Structures are given as structure tokens and as C-alpha cells.
Length: 532
Ligand code: C2E
Ligand code: MG
Ligand code: MG
Image (cartoon, rainbow, N blue to C red; front, side, top):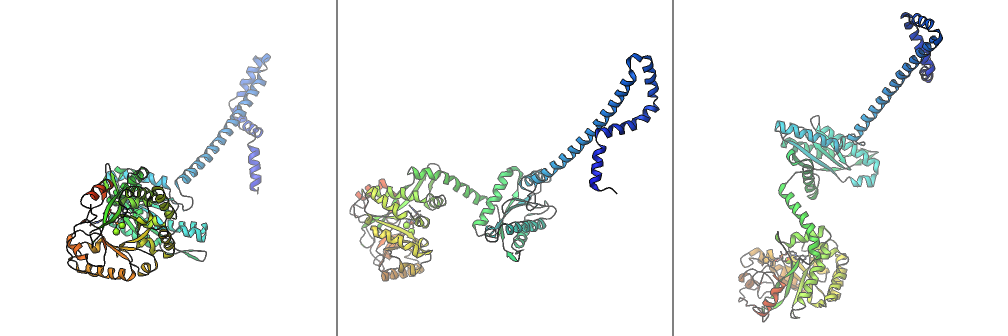
């Protein structure tokens, strides 16, 4: 028996031109004999002796045979090369359509399937559903247990998804820890929800790896596949649904919500305009009077940011401030507003102060004290006329981080007010341990206080607390003379609200100071009841 190597050597030898020549001669000799070709050649050569035709003929025959053999050999070789190329092409095609780690189809293949499903869906008028799956807590798996563990977890999740999706559906890995499912065409929305619940449950099952128990979870955004919208829009919607889940706590599924999407799109549009609005001081301070409710004296103004947009109208501060925070613009916005407010207030009587809001994220900015100081230096506004309003959420996370900042403000001569008191944690230890000058009772406890017994109790409690801690109190949201009358005579010294004035732009302040507030006083109703 010949070994495989020997066989290969013989195969090579047999394919050499010499061997092929002899072989082809062996094959063609009897054929030529049969056809009496030699007699023909003999006769021809005899009659054309001078031509030495027999040698020429023999040469031609041999050359023809050698050429034929060579062509046959070459064609076989070419065939083999094209077979190899074909199989390489198939392998490349397979790789181009599959995720090498999990073996699932990839984004490209999934999109092709979606396109086909869209044709089928249009034809059958049946709804089909897509689910975008993103793993929760996957990054720590890689970070803590290493990439081998991460890869294993991904493969396990892929298997679990494949199993759940079954024959009629498709599952693909889009990349990283993101997967996508096209549910089977016969599944309705309720079936899809049930499947989504099972997927969440199965994916959350521990993944055993190398004696470890790896824990990941999943969030799923669901959307009904609508071919009219096109692929990228559908995937964007699924992504939005997924984002909603991630935002609201993970580990569950959510359907695409058109209203929430519109809001998110609007926020994105506002975010793109916000930068230039901040740079160009388009967002301006409005001012709401703060009044001594015992004497009617005007003591100052709260600075409230206003963005009056040419097409969107008045964009509320709650909207653009959170967008500014999300986009890293809150620091610049704060500086722009404070500078404008200091320039405006520098023209008012010195007795009038301004109260400036600082959001929790703004408060975390390490440069806040420095930038405030710079604005004061730049504008020449006295720090003693400035109060910074912060909310409890600014300080509750870490009182020890908040304290040096508050102390730094106080060292500059700036006062600190705790805004919206009562709506947050109302932490007494925070009140005791931080050097606040004033608390502002949230308007939800003040508006309608004259008729609302529970609010009366709460406000009374806050007032006695503030008195005990020697803090000033401002009541926000005084809307009626009854509310004001109720608070008068109490230990609440300051108030603000629509009863006195709504927030107004800077150019109305001088008019206001010259007319109805000329004496820095408003006409107050007689006190009806005292609290606190
Ligand atoms: P805030 O600091 O508690 O401001 C008081 C809010 O109550 C203001 O709303 C004011 O217009 C409103 N208000 C005042 N009196 C009354 C009243 O009698 N009735 C009613 N219904 N509302 C009254 P605004 O201007 O929409 O501001 C909302 C919040 O946005 C502010 O709450 C503050 O937290 C934030 N904010 C406003 N301007 C700025 C700013 O320049 N920077 C920062 N970081 N936050 C700001
Ligand atoms: Mg405020
Ligand atoms: Mg407030």
C-alpha cells in the first residue's frame, strides 16, 4: 500500500508533461492505427518524399497530443482553482453575515432579513415586531472577570436568545452587548410581550464560568416593524424605546412611545440651539420681587432665567436648565445669567439684593466659587447683595463636600438660602450642620394656605424650626391677599409670589421702582391670623 505522501508524489509525476506525452501517445496510438492513419501518412510521404512528410506528420501528431494533454491539465487546474475560490468566497460571505463570536447573524444579514420581512408583511398585511436587547451590568463582567468571561457570557446569552426566538424568528448580534430580534411573523403584541418577559428572565439566570457565577441582565425596547418608515427610522425607534427602559431603571421592556420620542427630539433640537443662546446672552434674567411681608418693603429680587425663543415661545427654565446640565453648558449659562443680573442690579438702589439659583449639578462644579467671584470682580457688584439659592439635593449627597463650598461663598460675603424647603429630604442634620442664612418654603405649602389646614400645620412646623435655628424664612408662591394675610404676623419675614409681582424683565424694574414701589413698599392687607 502506498502512503498518502507517495500517492501525492505519483499523482504529481503522472501529471508532468513527459508522462502526459507518453500517456496520450499510448491512448492515441491504437486510435491512429484503427483509422489507418499511418497508411495515409505512408502514402502521402511516399508521394512527397522530398517533403520528409512522415517526420513532419509524426511531429504534428505528437505536438497535438502534447497540446491536448496540456490543455486538459490546465483546464483541470483552473477548475480546481475556481472551486477553491468559490469555497473561499462562500466562507467570506458566511463571515460577512455572521458574528464570529456568537455565530449569530450580524447587523447586515439582519437588515436584509428585515427588508424581506417588510415585503412579506406588506403582502400579508400582518404586523411584525422587533426587539432591541441590551445587556445590563455587562461592562463590570469584562472589567472584573476578564474578557474570556465576557465572551462566554455573550455566547451564553446568544444561545438563550436563539432558543427563545425559535424557528420563525431571527436574532442577531449588533455589536458589543447589543442584540436584536425579529419575532416570528405569527406572534402578536401580547405574544411578543410574553416572549420579552421570558427573555428577561432567562438572560438574568446566572452564567456559570470557571467556578464563577456571572450575573447580567437585559433591557428590551420593542417596536412594531413598519416598512413605510424605513430601516434606520425603525431601528432609531427601537433604540429610543430601549433608552426609555435604561433611563427608568433597566431590567424590563418598553414599547416605543411616540410622545416621549417627540419630547426627546425636541430636547435634542433645543440642545443644539442652546449653545449659541448661552454664548449670545439670549437667555436673560427676569426678576421677581421679594418683599418684607411685615412692612411691605421691597428687599430684592429672585433672578429667574427666561428663554423667549423666536419660534418655540417661552421655554421654561426647568426644560432648558436640565438640557444645559446634560450638555455641559450649565456652568456657562450660570456665569452669563449672573453677569447680566449683576450688571442690571448695579443700577438699582443698594438696599436691593438679588437671589440667584444654582442647580445641584451646577453646585457640583469645582469652579463655581471662583467663577462667581470673577463675575463679582468684573461687574463690581457687592457680594453682600448676593444670595445663592441651592436645593437640598445639592447638599444631601455629601454634606462634607458641600460645606467647604458654602463656607467659601460665605467668606466672600455671599448669603446662602435653602430653596424649595419641604419638597426634598428636609434633612434636619443638613439644616443644623450647614451655615444657611435662610430657608425658602416651597410654594406647594404656601399657595392656598389660608384654606388648607395641612399646609398650615406644615408651614407652622417649618417656621418654628427656622426660629429655633435662627434662620430667616421666605414664603414662595403667595398668590392671594388671603395667603399673605395668613402669613403676616408670623415669624415668616419675607415673601414672594404673583400677589406682589410675576417675574419681570430688567427694563421694567426702573419703571416699577419709580411708580408702585417708589417707597419700596406695597399696600399690605391687615393681618388676620398669626402662625409660627
Ligand atoms: P424656584 O427657584 O423655586 O423659583 C420659583 C418659581 O416659582 C419660579 O418659576 C417662579 O416664576 C414661580 N413662582 C413665583 N411665584 C409664584 C406664584 O405665586 N405662583 C406660581 N404658580 N408660581 C410662582 P420659574 O421661573 O419657572 O422657575 C422654575 C425653577 O427653575 C426655579 O424654581 C429654579 O429652580 C429654576 N430656575 C429658574 N431660573 C434659574 C436659573 O437662573 N438658574 C438655575 N439653576 N435654576 C433656575
Ligand atoms: Mg429659587
Ligand atoms: Mg423655590
